Amino acid sequence: MTILRFHERFADKIIAGTKSSTFKLGDVYFKPGDFVQLRKRKGDDPNDTDLIPPSLVWQVQPMIFHFSAIRGLIETISINGAALGPLDSEAFAILEGFEPVGIWQEAETALEEMGQFFTTLWPEQRVVTGHVIQWVPTGGFDQVANNLFAAVMLAKERLDVA
Image 1 (cartoon, rainbow, N blue to C red):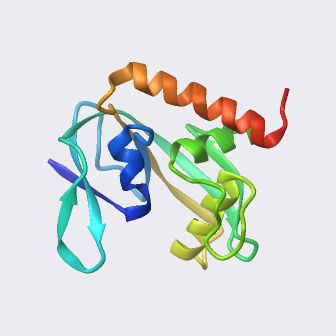
Image 2: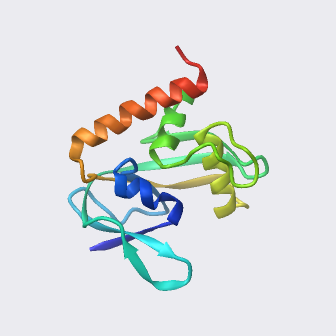
């Protein structure tokens, strides 16, 4: 079983089931049907904390982020070669567990917060390629659908889209 480790900022969202996907840099080593153990990283401590029981991977999709590390902004997100629009990008960032709180400065959207977070991880890069891995949350696929609906509605509110 493969272990996925998460920054503590995402732990509560994983436990609640509102975050059920993650982006992994580089080549894919997951496939649908695999089970993953989700753990909270404790700094340099090798003893991680399990967040929920092992989870079933149901989707693995290639993904590319174009972003400006200087401005801390994500310019485009592409999944399976298709670029997401502003509404879909904001909904994706919400589903990934980002909130407009800002790391160094106040972010107005989840996508801005995601850009700031990526800048801390990859300050020298402009393009990051990897895969998004989705697992079944404890609430099952009904919860996946509810989370998606809630993320799109919140993204519409933030972006003032009718």
